[in-house]
Length: 162
Image: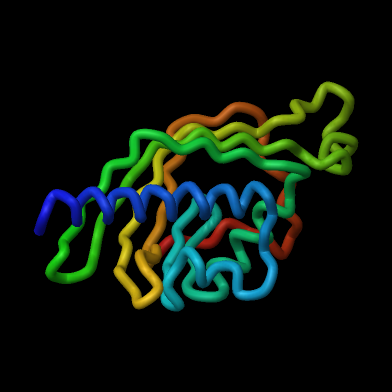
């Protein structure tokens, strides 16, 4: 593998991660939005459970819609590419800020913190598809939080992670 290939893969994967989180924060969920970022068989693991494929992206959309706004800041992207297999591993630090909806704040009272902030890191497996690199596995590990998470309705319960 040439240095140019390594740099090209790193740039493409880094751009993919940045574009994915920007799409989440800008709430760009039109059409088959997730196909630009993930494989059809993607598996996601978060503090509220694990999901696969289309369901995983529906869960991501649903989770973000619990908030008025979000901002995901990623840094320190580390990437290991296996060119022969067309696979890569990536990890990055993240600061994830969530702005509660007014309805949540009213429910919690006038002293409610408007922000729920999470510091942690993400790990991902990627595959080179015909269209370019796509995320096939993705998990987030929260290392610390401030504020309170959203109010979960009875039908939304943390699922066990298999």
